[in-house]
Amino acid sequence: MPELPEVETVRRGLASRLQSFVIHDIDVLRDRAVASPGGPHALCLGLQGQKVGHWSRRGKYLMAQLHEPQTGTCNGVWGVHLRMTGQFQWHPTQTDPCRHTRVRLWNEQGHELRFVDMRSFGEMWFVPQNVPIDSVITGLHRLGPEPFSEEFNATYLQQKLRGSTRTIKAALLDQAVVAGAGNIYADESLFASGIAPHRKAGELRLAELERLCISLVHVLEISIGAGGTTFSDFRDLEGVNGNYGGQASVYRRTGQPCLVCGNPIERKRLGGRSSHWCSECQS
Image (tube, rainbow, N blue to C red; front, side, top):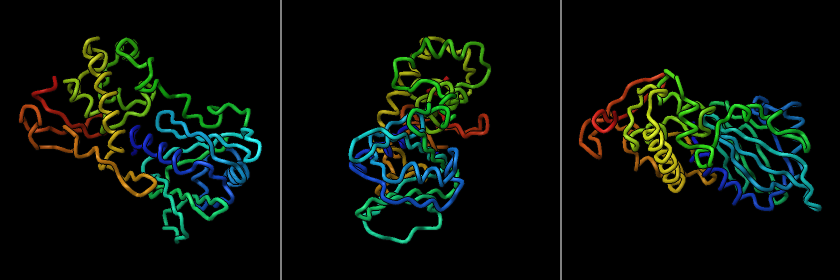
C-alpha cells in the first residue's frame, strides 16, 4: 500500500500536472470506485465542468478543491484514497485503457487523467460545497496527527501509548496514532532510533520516543525526496516508481548484513505484518 511519501509524491504530481485542468468529461468504469453518496452519477455531476484547484494531503487521503472556471467560485472537494494499488496515470494522447482502469477524466484538449487500480480498493468522493468534508470522507475522523506537525512529538506519543501492551510497530501502523506511516517506514524509523519493533509501546521511555519521532520524520523526508519507494506497486503520474528502496536499511533485507554492525537482518511477523530489524542495533 502506498504510504505517506508515495501519496505525497502523487499529490505533488497532480498539483503540477493539473494546473488549469478543467474536467470536460468523466467516465466511471467501476461503480465501487466511488464511495460518496449518490455513487458515480453524483460524482460525475459534481466534477464535470469544474477546474481542479489546490491539492492537499491528510494522512493517505488526497483532496482537491473544485472551482467554477470563470468566477473561481469554490464548488466542493474531490477526494481520493489510493488504498493498496490505486494510481493515477497521465495520458496526453488517446490510448486504450487497461482492464484495471476505474475512472477516466478528460479536459477539453483531450488530455486524460486515468485512475487505475488492480485490486479495486481505491475510493473517490465528491463533497459538495458547505458540506463538512469529514462527514463524507468519514475516515478522516480517525486520523492522528501528521508526522510533520507540531502535535506529533514525544510527549504526545507517551500520553497516547501510556499503558499500551501492543508492540511499538503495531502502534506506528495505527493511523489514529500517526497519520500516513506504514510498514516500510515504521521498520526504517525503528531501526534509525535503535528500538526493536516487538517492544511494548507503553514501556518506551520519553527519550526513546523522542528519537523515534525524529527518526520517523527524517526517514519520511528522505523518501519524499526520493519520490517514494520501489517496494510496492506504486507509480507516479508518469509511470515511474520511487528510489527510496535502494536506501532502505532493514526493510526487505532479511539475512543481509546490517549496514551498521554487520549482523544479519531478521524478519518476523508481528500483528500480521512482516517486521525487519537488527537485533544488535535495536533493543
